[in-house]
Image 1 (cartoon, rainbow, N blue to C red):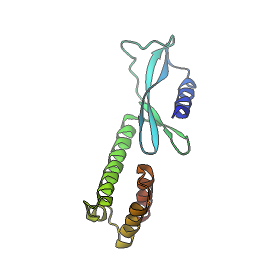
Image 2: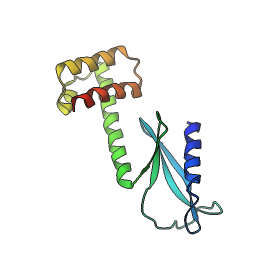
Image 3: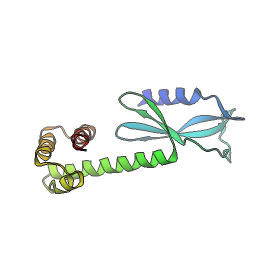
Length: 149
């Protein structure tokens, strides 16, 4: 993770002075399945956080892709979309965990994504034979679902 923090710091420093008397600092980091998200924080050029940050529109932060290390600026709307996607992936993972523990069925997955019996069987095989790593399971299920859409 320290590698991503260095990338984030370098990216933010590359902006220099973004408003008269202000620059960005890397803010809070949030981890998502595929990306790290960082807030932009306004600081005075001397590095101090102002009591009242300047009002400015635009991006609220940025992500760094865990695989490609590609950086993408996000608006508040983009961040909400990212959070919603993460919630959906978490729901899938938790429900799949229940399936592996044999306390739930596949009917919710079939109806939500209009999957065929063949696709459900592929998912079941992945669940039952895989080490139950969240990222791997979500990636495999997303691939099957994406193929179906």
